[in-house]
Amino acid sequence: MCVGGYAMNSKTNEKNMEMNHTKQKSTPNIRWMLVGYDLIVYAIVALILLVLYGGMDKLSTVGVFQQIALSAVCIFSARLLGKIYGQVWRYGGIQCYIRLLFTDSIAFIVYLGLELLLPVQKITFARLLSLVSLNLLGALALRMMYRYAYKCGNQETTRGKILSILLHVFSGIEAGNEKEVQKIKVAIIGAGRVGVSLAEELLNNSEAAYVPRCFIDISKEKVGRDIHGIPVWSETEATFKKLSEFEVQEIIFAIPSMDADKKKTLYEYYKNAGYKLKVYDYPTMYAAGGKRHLREFDHRRTFI
Image 1: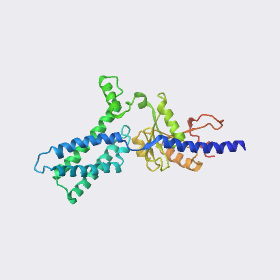
Image 2: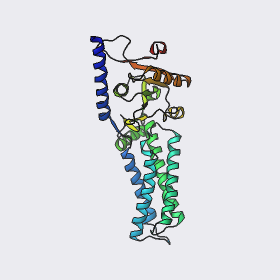
Image 3: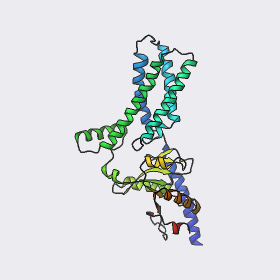
Image 4: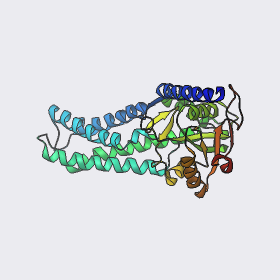
């Protein structure tokens, strides 16, 4: 009776702590600092092409504001809907740049259509295309410089130190180090209290052999958010292609409440894809106050 009562109370307390922890730690998956830098890029381009431009189709003050409002709404709405500001650019690969190119292409088409239909002062097609294209080039350059600074800012050279300072000043993060490059990249199944505790432990321990790249969870309240700068994906979003882009090498189960059948399905799914699997959990026999630790996934013991 005592053991059963303890187990029930433990599960209840763990669930309550998990809910509170998620509310405190998770934040909307929009990087507002990056939005701000993109707005600066947009403002510079708009100033050159809409305000200072002195061609045949020079705009009046009203026309300038009309075009700024129309183009800004189209560009940034497309990027928000395309989840451009939800991507982790220091880890993402070519797919991130392709998505940005695609969303800005959609923005251009919508902008062109609205400009023709709405009663606003018109500009030439070439000028409109230049406005969107230069914004895209500026956004791409910004992200490439960020990734370059993150990867090269750890070098013990004058250039490396300058890049490290700039990265810290403009993004608030530190450059990646050689240890992180050598660490095993992992995806954590479970973005609750247990999974987040594991991520914190790995992030705060410079000697840890693992570095978390993403969470995988089924909770709609957690999917699409960031926890400690780590994105939370749904099971459908966490495709093998996406895991490969984030250089994920191993999968860690950190969700004790998952039933055996579901765990077996996921185990076989990732095992057949060639991933190594581990479990972050208590040992088989443990006492109150015991500590979870990382161990190999023993499917024979887990599914019995």
